[in-house]
Length: 287
Length: 281
Image (cartoon, rainbow over all chains, first blue to last red; front, side, top):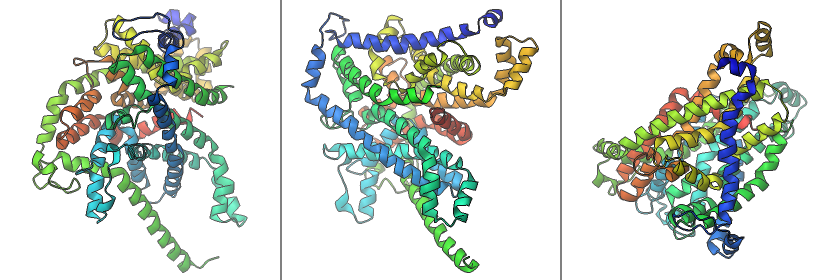
């Protein structure tokens, strides 16, 4: 065995690359084939249906609502970035207790969406939930809301909770970026008489491009995958109000067993990801 | 120059503002946990009659016992799947990352991009084929099916992590070993692996947390027998809808392993998160 690898070091790549090739790239092609078929129900059926599923998709109001909500989730990107950058600047002061605060800010990100979704269901519970109880206790009972249980408020409620979960991570990324700004550049700018704000704008901010790009891509990726948290909190409801493309895909495929139709939703999602993320990956890893 | 007195006064005000903001954020992040812990310690009839923010008047662990009765088997399943998935994805990813870090070959960069792109994959786009594959292998509702899925989809991330870790190994060591007549496999085992213990621990902690927390594969690839804890907790929301104390206790059970990991090995988990992001830039 060892001898074999000694002679052919690239042989170790066969198994992992084989996994990736089959489970990722064959899978993607296979999914597209399914999306062009008539497969409904548990019996596998690959008879060709052309673009019939896509035609139906584009006439389906649930699809357009899911698409809209998927893009609506992109709102968490600028919010998390502003919040995360602000937190990173606070933490970068290195006053006492900074590491504890950093751990607290990052805690939600470490936990499962299933756990946080359950916690936020109790946060938002209209009857006796944490937020409404807190508001009543502060004499703001009139502000007690319906949160995730009403069509108008469900998406903002989801966005708030996801900001809670992701912003600490963005802060961590920015904090690492801030630490890598050379201290002597900052000192030199101060010696030149620049104000703190000016130092931040002219010296620090331009060097945060990399963490900024990373944060955008990572949160966008989570937003496009937004299944777990929404599934646990609302299941896509009330009605269809919090359907996103991943939720619609799961419901169509595995609950209604419309495999071909679900696969076409997945293909649309894939195309969106390709348009948004592949240029970034290509630019980053090209040497 | 400002005089010392003014400066310290100004600084004191700044410190107050600073801590005020930090505590404000901490309140925001910890509020759901506070509500969950107090609620989980209350008896059922206190849950709807007292504020969720108030401390329990007679704290009880009965909700934890009830929740554990539901979660015992799923927690065990999760543990098996997490350990298995972490082990195999790290084994394969570390070998893969090593080759990409130390060797140049034709189209190496193209191949690497194809591996890493899978990190950004929307899982829905492979869910039907994955489901079919696992079913035709006879692994539906088995922990092995889930382990296989987590291994396959864990490799891109572990490859990326290990490539950046192995890139940090001094070339001098590798060259010396080559001069001493070691082959690539021996170099990997005798030089590289020992000097990357921290890297391996980091990848382990990261994979453990990701697999333990995962929902989509778990939902699609398992039924009642191999159901992991995340799916089971999600089901409790339907069956025990009104019993918030049990739901909150259940959340704490499911969060516990990762919470412990975060408390004990937080440094490595954070390092993993950073490897996931910094390596991506």
